[in-house]
Amino acid sequence: MPFSDTTDFADADRGFVQALQPGVIKDAQGRVIWDTDSYGFLRGTCPSSANPSLWRQSQLTVKQGLYEVAPGFFQIRGLDLSNMTIIEGDTGIVVIDPLISTETAAAGLALYRQHRGDKPVTGLIYTHSHVDHFGGSLGVTTREDVEAGRCPVIAPAGLLEHAVAENIYAGTAMSRRAAYMYGAALPRGEKGQIGAGLGQTTSVGTVSLIDPTIDITATGQEQVIDGVRMVFQLTPGTEAPSEMNLYFPDRRYLCMAENATHTLHNILTLRGALVRDPHVWSKYLTESINLYARQSDIVFSSHHWPIWGTDRIVEYMSLQRDLYGYLNDQTLRMLNQGYVGSEIAEIMRVPPNIEKVWYTHGYYGSVSHNVKAIYQRYMGWFDGNPAHLWEHPPVEGAQRHVDAMGGANETLKKAQKAYDAADFRWAATLANYVIFADPDNRKAKDLQASVYEQLGYGAENAPWRNFYLSGAYELRNGSFGTPTAANSKGLLAALTVEQAFDAISLFINGPKAWDARIVTDWKFSDQRDAVRRAELRNGVLVHYERRPDDGLPAPDATVTLTRGGFIQNMMAGGDMKAAVAAGDVTIDGNAAVLVEFKSFIEKPDPDFAIVTP
Image (cartoon, rainbow, N blue to C red; front, top):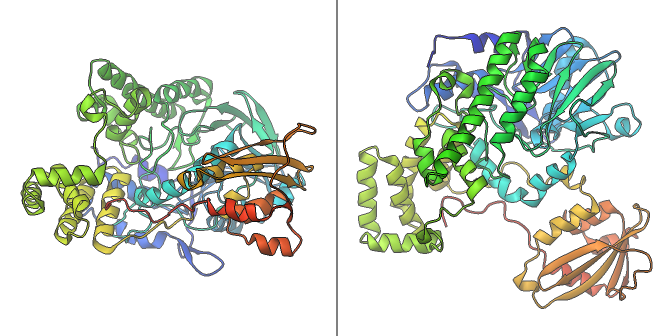
């Protein structure tokens, strides 16, 4: 790679105004939720414990502060995983993507106001449904300003539904795995966390979500907010199920959300998500190029740094487009020749003209795991070999492998031999068998930790490095849990009644509730007295809206409360008895069934094991 080419560093520094000093952000209780200063070691030369290409990427993403990209156009970078963009209007500012946490968003806005005055936020835009693009909303505006119409909130259609589905329904498991993916709990340093490829890591502050007031439903739709004219391009199914790009025709700025960044992105993130569609992604990039790129002077995204100049913009977006299209098409070509995902991942090489530029490298997504995701998208988990149709689960399979190799000691000898020969992939497999067959085997854990460290040090992909080093850390020190709060109160508050019931249904312990039969009606006093019936039967919670005079039999109990009261008392650990005593909740009928109903709701485990059984 051309390490002598410093164009990215010049672009990343262009328009720099001021860094946040010190680069530490705390919450109201004094807890550090963001610390850029802890990455000071990145100013040094690349050590042997880091891939030089990833080290270079982290040197770029660690840059933080306020940047003036063009007159009236500013970005806050390096104060969270994502960027916050500020476009000045006639009377105030339009904010695009307010980071993950209210604290980081507020700190970024304060830094801008130090230099440009106390301009009001007159518009808020979410480009897509991932938490790093809406979580800090209450750090830049208030619900009162939004409800009064002083700050419209614009988002692609379906954002609220997808944001809730991703962060609530599977939120605990995703958050636990995200701790590995972003390395948020790892020590910072040359042998620890050096970045996440897309940014440094995730902040761990307060997550919020203000409901959108304007939905973007079609490409070409225009909005003018505080004198700022915007044209939108819907791109569902690309980097997020609900996503859009923005074009500012009067200023020739193009915002690519997260559809074009300075890295190969994920088709399937290692934290878990729905598999994305690289074919659709490629087609939308072609549309972006033809509609907007050729009429743009600046392209920017919600991560990394902008690119200036029409020709550079078109080349950048074209190579990104070609990359996703190539991976999709070649994976399908090879799977139709009988190759399975793991085989295609080993064979796949991207064209030299694509690989030679920095922004196509796999700092966040990787060719290897993206190819496997594409295979999964089209073919599912099963590779067609009957031997893989009914394999033993990890513990039982490990016990049989270890026995077949002559026991734990013999297996570890083979693992050590592989480690000494730098065959780390095989060493990891063998040591993993011993750990899952004998979880208390300290020798196996120590060897596996060393294996993971070597694999992490060599990885160009930041999530791979963080996964390996997080696994090593937990094998040596025990679980670090989930640094970020799953199912945060800010997200729970955004649930509709239907979504809240859907979420509760996922936490019902089915076998425990097999024989239960409970029928309840829930009347919502702040929703025009809408009534929702919930039936727990055969371990399944079925719920639906009741219609007047529907002739249904009487329930065991009718509960009257607000939507917020329902979420607080049924999902957020509230005390139902205290709410009844205070008059916030009324129960008609057999109140005991509510106690029984709640006994079947099982709390998710944010500390489940990953590298051990």
